[in-house]
Length: 435
Image 1 (spheres, rainbow, N blue to C red):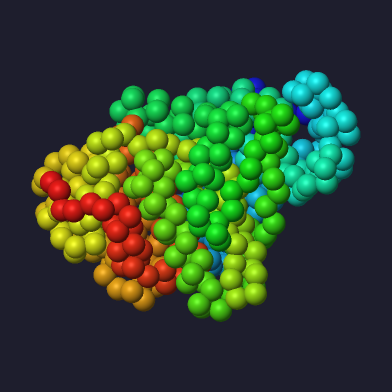
Image 2 (cartoon, rainbow, N blue to C red):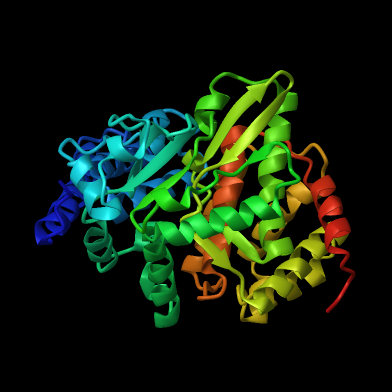
């Protein structure tokens, strides 16, 4: 049974959010009239908002759950401080569908029941998120498999969700700040996650590009067991990255994990012109092996190919960071279409962002902390809200991903040695100072 997709779905969501705002307003008015200084703190209000979004995500999934996920990894400290701990469930532990005819779904998609296709198939999912739930299975030859099943009727649901306000998918900014081309491109990108055959192609590409990185694992798609709505791959062992971090790994391991995440986020676009635009913490699995680890990348539903002009500008941007050249950095921001008015470079808010964004690339032991990532996020989105930064169809997913990755590193409290990563990166790219 699929989630409801009629107008009642939108009404219930808007009603819940409205009552949350009314409660907060009424509480603060009451405290003001009783001369009690204890109004709802910003932290408490964020906690209430997070709790509401989690409740809505559990109930409706689809675009509403994706909004909650982005809220989780775009707000900097949403997952690293109390009372946000339970919010991490939105990434990989939403409730599975209570009533779901799995046999009928497989009959429609592959013409056979799971019992006919697999040696074993566990109908209890090992994980559930915004668009799908994942089941563990065994192939006829005994190999472990992961079977991702898209929620029935999801395409209709997601289209309906994207037809409403999508501000929460945009870091809380109003879509009215974006031109029609950008909004259309953004919605098309989100809808592309529904095509699991496209995701399978991305898995093959990324697996081929990074096959020499022995610590990185990319699931291998099983073509004859996959359709547009079912993706069967090799099984990747490991804990979701936030669960792994609860084990309090030593700093050396924590820093190495952060280094690999940052390296992947830079190598993908700069070396191959493609990137995974969804750094959802639930998409990374970790397993430890003696004094080493394995990092699994398990979701490539939202992969983006960079426009050539943005790719060249992004290389210039990181070369500017490598050379500590603020003038070159500003030129790169302009060529990436992020800054379209030179007067922005004189604003105090931009100067603050430039200092924050550059900081990790100046110090080998720089700490990506929760407070640092939250500050970067808040300044970035404020620059967008005040139209000093312009998100376009060519750069919106790149910067949405970039801010998300900064926040993920902040959740891990890691020192990834960004200057070394840049040095290694430009040795691979073999680029020089080009303007």
